[in-house]
Length: 316
Image 1 (spheres, helix red, strand yellow):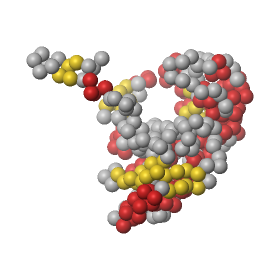
Image 2 (cartoon, one colour):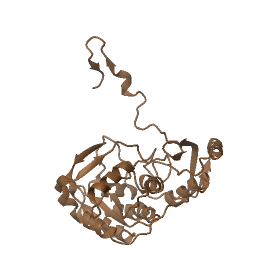
Image 3 (spheres, helix red, strand yellow):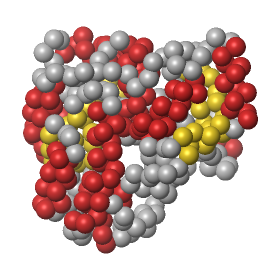
Image 4 (cartoon, helix red, strand yellow):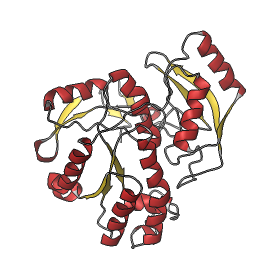
């Protein structure tokens, strides 16, 4: 853990943590409690729950909040015009290739499509937990004023308490003053926090609840291996642990290429594993791998230490 000072002297606790598509994707409870202690009764602590309301945020509420006993006052949902255009029907983006023109030029129909589908769904997921939502639109220099205004308008029409364009990347803390005011206002409103599922529900029903209510699936399909694992965990007394889904972050479904809000699908559960020390059961959805970011041949194979000069080779 490190403490960094960011915009305008604000201290930030930085934790290295797991990705939310294969684990809980949240900063530690310890960091949150230390931050709360430092800011006092009238301060605000912003804690990250990564990879969208369907993954990091769902796990923040159902896993982390159960463990910590802490209850959030407001959800800040970060959006970008470019991402909304993709969910609204924009063409695929390839790493290293120039962005297609629709992501650089004004395209209100794609923005509206993304807001109507994906952004609305993300707001609805947050509302499942009874917490007000503020949409923070991370503005790019290619975004037009009409696109920015459309996102903010449609976000509020979809149930967000407020929606605010943010310019902190260019202006530092001054660029997020409107967001701070909106968060302060939303946090002062009454909320009705609730968990998505009762921890004592059967493992299968907890998985099904997440799949249907959060992802929008029609149902789940368990492989024979998954069924056998669940039976074993129940026999071992682990049936009351929360669920940590291992699912792609590229779609609300298990299909990375399905943008927007996919419907009419059954969520396949390939396997179910247990992290008893961490305190959760983690189902593997479809072909999802639990090893992030490694190439076919990891670079450490080519790193060596010269026994004579003690120089390290192969790092660069």
